[in-house]
Image: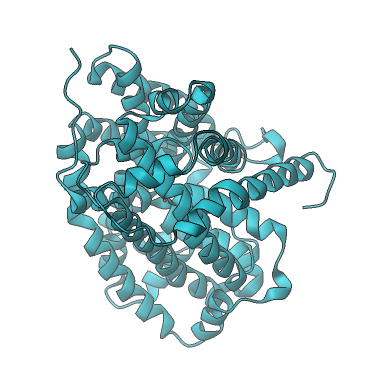
Length: 451
Ligand code: PHE
């Protein structure tokens, strides 16, 4: 007999756990560096519009689908429509690709946490520190392994005990600290120019590239198109108001992303101007903030607290990535949780080695011209997720009908704000955008258009 499906204790527990999955390195690490790279305000502008329409619709669709089927991605797709069951498998592939490199970055965070803990914050403020660190071999591997192991041990605790308890305690603290750091940074002389760059859209900088980047970020940040929100939806009790929960998750996730950009982008602007922002990459958070902390009174302590919080945000997300993979295995095969969790962890460690060493020992190997970490990030966010999202939209928009979802999320008489947007998005706008993006990316990748 299967064990009874565990569930969240209620609406709030669900929102906090889903927010725990959504809010993570995507908000704190990925969003700021993309915003910096893709023109600041214009990126934010595009992102916000997409979040309120596209992101919202996909989130409702996935959570609704999970609660309706009470199953994880693979079985959920099978249940809704047999012809689309391959989408479930594809969706499950995404977290398998993300987990390894996510834990590599988690390892970087852990390293910085340890550096601050041992009073080395001043060293970390050196502009070459990050580059030197990731070029190493033993340390990046070690911290990556430790981060992955921690993630695994928490997932072994089960849904309620593991995921919920962690998320509940730490999110509010993260918000308060982030606001505090923002206020400090915005008051540094010269920061205002950076704030302007970050917030005011300059429409001459608009390009399809910005839209693509924003959309990929949306998937990543809201944990969409990879089965995660389907799994989470399956743990939601039938009397929970899904619409309300979706709104809260959406607002929370976006607010944290904006906040962390505000913490990081103006600070980079102060130190290295607009050029520095454009050439920024995956190291942005790690190379800038330590410089800010070094200038701050009590910077050592603030830096420590900051990296502790980033670390916890990263852990609550990484457990959700691992959980998504494990719950699919449990749904599909008769393995026990222990075996599944450790099996996946070992696989993730092996798969993560290229990403961990891609800035050092394996620096010369550049698939599609990218380092390994960026490559895996690209394959998952820019190729697989759009494909999964596209076919999920086609399935609901054109085959089974959006009504299935609408009925599910309003079955206790809840009101469905943005219902029209939802329908039009799922049926027309999202599929068209996704096809355009997929074509554009492939053309750009193979050199047919300049990018
Ligand atoms: N959404 C999480 C974040 O913003 C990361 C994540 C990615 C979580 C993929 C689950 C799956 O960091």
